[in-house]
Length: 260
Image (tube, rainbow, N blue to C red; front, side):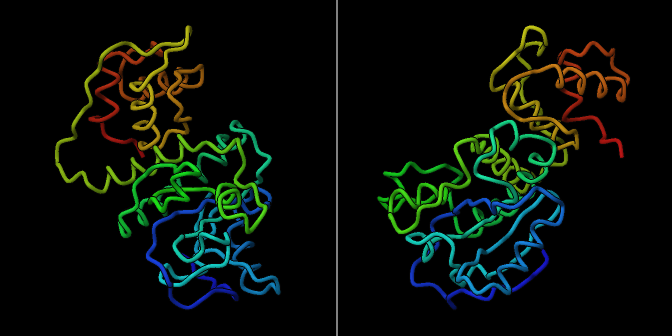
């Protein structure tokens, strides 16, 4: 990870780490936004910083985890602060576009390493849980609402917490999987469109296809785009290109070699 040391921070901590606090930068979605934000933290007169800045293709370290970043008053001493490229006004669809999918994957990799190191559970805390001192993920908006020491609303109501946290879980699961033979989840039904198939099995398949490198939205809904990806995958693996995830297609998502 690149390192651009922030100007403003406290050396060390006065409380154990229990939170991962998600922010947005209020900066445009570009492949160099993480670097731009980090350079701003390194030089600006306003007293602010974060531990890591993330965009679609990189993460930049600004403050060591063992030190205290100045980002979310009330949750600085016990929080790890992550800044994401984008704006609080973004809709769920805008967070989940191609740039957003890459951004969330970068951010999830960082968050997964934090969860593993600091034993932080992968869950979004309610405001009551945040106030009660529970461990987990929170937003700058909730920190502002609970501690009333700032007025920020990021990363906004459209931020896809479910997709982001599922991606974090997948990174952690991948690290724990040391088997030579992949374990294939049970196939229970054909996934088709139209009509749209939805459910946990769709989420499982989408997550695996994204892991293989396909640009797919992980939301639990089998869409027209999913059908197109399925057909391309089937052609690649010599499976009849029906666009439906049958048992053979399902198993191939876990067992077939990944094509470079």
